[in-house]
Length: 103
Image (cartoon, rainbow, N blue to C red; front, side, top):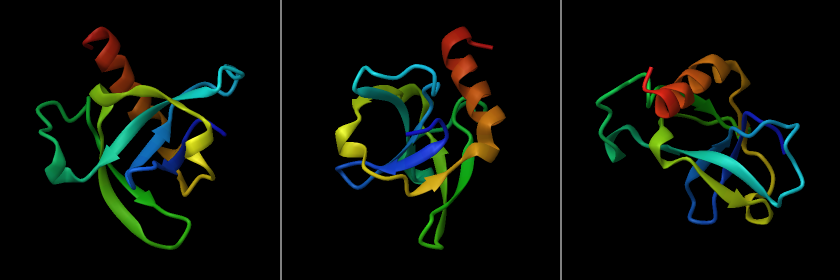
């Protein structure tokens, strides 16, 4: 498991792992759901940026980082990553900062 990896959740949705790789051993990972643009109101685009997710199967989707829905989830159901969003690191970090600090 690595920060920036995208996983398919048991309900079929996608979520990105945002937990530091240094913090491990708890049996959970901190993830943020990725949802379709019509599934959530985006009053603050910096808080919920629109990301292009290129899946390893060759398909891609435009999805919203649903930062206010961030949560710790058990590691076991996550399985193998289906994509990686390392290139979106700064935008994801800015969204988390906005959630935590309001700036």
